Length: 352
Image (cartoon, rainbow, N blue to C red; front, top):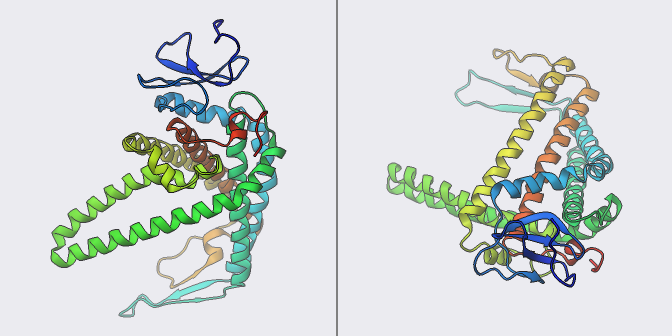
C-alpha cells in the first residue's frame, strides 16, 4: 500500500486506497490494519468523525488480534492478578465449606434440609470479594492495554495496570448501575407475567415468552454499560450515551452480543474439558442417592491443593472468555461512535 493522505495529516479515518468502500486508520505516519466500512454520510479525516459498524468477521478478528498481540502483557497481568485472586477465593471457599454437611429426610411430607459445619462466613465473603476486585482490575487493565495498542505498542502491562487501577471506581460504579437497572427490569417483567397468570395461565405463557425476548433485546442494547466505562472518555460512560449511539443498531448489537456469548461459552467448555479429568484425581466419592447426608468433600474431593488447582484452571479460562467480551464490546462502542479516552486513541499525545 503506497498511497497515503497528502501532507501527512493528523491521525484519523480516511478512505482506504485499496478498498474505496472502506475506511482505514492513518496513525499520523502510516496505514494500520484497522479498517471499517464507510457509508454515504460518513465524514472522514481527523477528529471525532462518526463511525459505522465494521463487518462481523473483521470485528471479531480484531477482537482476537488485540489479545493475541498483547499476550505477553496479558499473561503477566494474569500472574499478578488472576492467579492470586483465584487462590485466595478457592482457599476461602474450602476453609469455610469443607466441614459442611447437608442432611435431609426424603420420607417426610415436606423436604426439610439441615445444613451444619459452616466455617467463617466472614472469611468466605472477604475471599470472594478479594477475587472479584482482583478480577475487575485485571479486566479493566487488559481492555485498556488492548485498546491502547491497536495501532502500535504504546502501553505495557505496568502502565495499563496503573491506568486500570485509576479507572476501577468508575467501572465499579457503572457496573452497579447496570446491575440495579437489570434487577428493576427483571422485577417488572416478573410482576407482569404474574399479573398475566392471574388473568389466564395461557396468557402468562405468551407474556412470559414476550418478556424473555424483550429481556434479550434490552441486554443486547445496553450490555455495553458493563464494558464501555473501561475505555470510554468522561461523559461517555453512562447508559444515556449507550442509548444514544445504539439507536437504530439494536439487532446488530444483539447479534454481536450473542456471538461473544457463544465464544465465551465455547471457551468455558474447553476449560471444563481440562478441569474434568483433573477432578477425577481428587478422590471425589460418588454420592449414593439413597443416602440422606451430603458432605462438601464428597462433591469436590478431599485434596485442598487439587481443589485450588481446579478453581485456578476455571478462573484462567473464564478470564479469557470475559476479556473477549469486554474487548469486543469496547470495539463495538467505538464503531457506533462512542468516544474512547484520548490516551487510548492517541496515547503519545494525550493524558488520562
